[in-house]
Image (cartoon, rainbow, N blue to C red; front, side):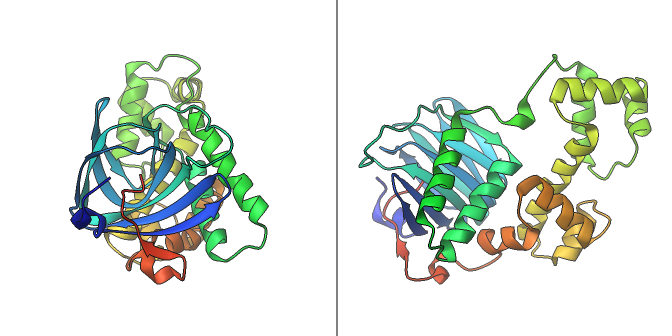
Length: 282
């Protein structure tokens, strides 16, 4: 549990879905949450802002798009960034009839799971009459928290020059040419393309697309620019190209993501289910 002053810096909206509770929580800018733990296991998605979390396993600097999976009882402390943060958390309630699936503490990134979590909140806010379908989607998300993300699958050990290529793409996701990337790595373009896919499980193009989307998510809320401007700055040809790529990776449009992540305002604007929450939701 957290003290009253910390709790007042967190505003949350809750959706009860059978054994699970989905929480959309807003955290104040530069909020420091002292070390604490939760009785319930959870998975939580950072949809806006940034934070640094410290636990016995180490520290992690999280940005929008990251997911954290926590078993019950993990001690951790959080410091939120200059713009605060919004999290979507899925918690297994202690009162549930069935035991929660086993999970281990980890931070990771997976755009498809992020998109599914945002879409779940979108549909819950719309007041969908199909409560069973919403609960099933939440259960599938929670159950998948113990699975390794497809993005991190490895089929062969990655040689150092592959890691260098990934770093260069991360620095400049607008890089247009495999030939240019291969030249900097000192290998043939064909060898680069084949080895990259064997080491990462995805193509160079898909890797670059995901980097661009991650950059766009940051830009959407860091600069509060129009989606058309975000598309260009993230390296997409235009807004239509951005929307197609975003939907392909997350299953939702940039506008739908933005409606849940929110560029301004707190969860308190979201309707009758909103209430102050007296403990950290994640």
